Length: 207
Image (cartoon, rainbow, N blue to C red; front, top):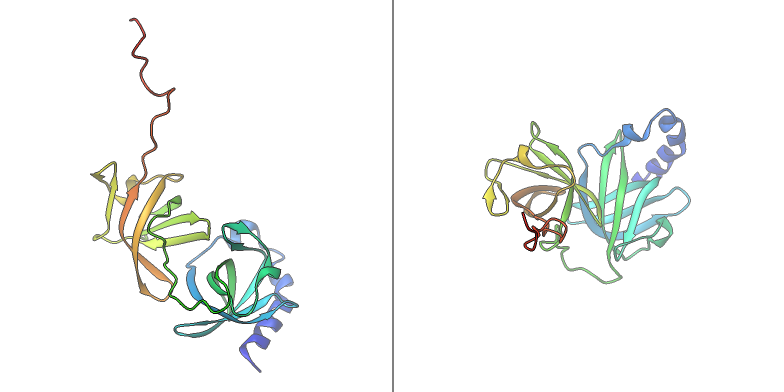
């Protein structure tokens, strides 16, 4: 029996397994990022397989998974064999559950995907100081980066620590893929918003 057939069987049993779960119970935990070309799409069981540099990987796509293309939320039906995709997934027993799928190239696209995009601003969704991880969200879905003592973090040019970052802040991250799907940040730069006219001092005011 192929791995795709086994995953299809797991999806058949999935409703009972997830019936008692709350949305909070499915918050991304130790998610990994996979990049590869779609080689098989099973629309009946919402499963798909991609060919990565390390070999084939098969995923189940739950109803609440997000599929994105060109920055627009699409749907599972938009996936097609030959597309190049970036998949964020978590391991659930013997199955890999896709959380987000971003279509990053059409048929024939074989160039390496530049992840993360250096110019892209990301929004912080969680700061795990004890675990040394920074969770962010981009157009491609939620991601996380490992932060080490070598990671340079700064706000407005001033060095700060991981604990000084706040949820909701926008950052630009330069990172290295230390192993497939695992990214370690070299630098984290906080984008300081420009003051609005309402925030600027009224130079015409008379004290």
